Length: 382
Ligand code: LLP
Image (tube, rainbow, N blue to C red):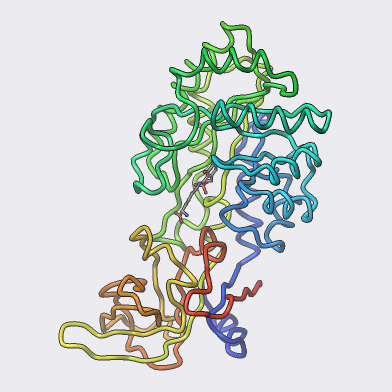
């Protein structure tokens, strides 16, 4: 993936930085368009990466936006997503954020509790408006992923549980400033086995039927995001198999023909097009291990420290040379968790070499922070 052209291009740029391959992003978006059914509406989850350069490409490909803060709604609008293509989710929306979204008449609020329904209704009433809402349902479906990114189990803080449905409908009847337009589900992230999505379809069918029997044939059903990517083989599997993913929904989801199907994909859209590029500062030989100390750390990419996530690491100054040594690849931050990979096989690595940490386009730059007063990480596009 990295050629001499890249290395020459990078040589004058201060490290660390995020490098985005926009061709790969465009190819990924074409594949989504090719494999989605005509009644599928894909909202891109801005939380994965909200860089305007990426958002403009994603918007031009016809995707909508899935936002989880007022500032994400604002960013989506600034990048020309239509208000009617913007969904606003999140378990703790503030009044200021709700008011902002109401002012822009967004497509839908995904509501997570009875209490939140009442607050949105009141805020809409103050503005003499009606808010479109979907109920975020906790379907109690296991996503079999890291516990920090599992969201669809009863023990998680997200969504409304089925035992609350009757009470929710009673409350909804009293709230005149809400349009009840849909159901929303999201079971977790980085899901590589498609079975949890099949289970989600089966649960969504049951729940949707329950609402239809109660007289609510809702225009939209949102199945969330969560499709995982291959962190181990970013080149061989640069684009996720969207055909099999959408195929599961085509096969198992049984909705009324008037119901539109929505998805909120984040990681599978942008992860593989982004890489964190860093330079080796020092090599330190230990008794049992050698350390390659980079100028990027957990401040630029927190996923390994927070979720014990694997990212492929490559010395791109030595592409094509045999891997002869193992290094613990670490950052400069004063925390032992500031480690990108242990016993990583690489060619003989030297000060000044460029190292790429792959598959970092999703939940990389957006989760970066300025701990230790480090510089805000920059980004480069090609
Ligand atoms: N919809 C909802 C309601 C979500 O909570 C999420 C992600 C998505 C959609 C998009 O999911 P995706 O397609 O990207 O899996 N920082 C973690 C991931 C957190 C995911 C949070 N929710 C990580 O680095 O792995």
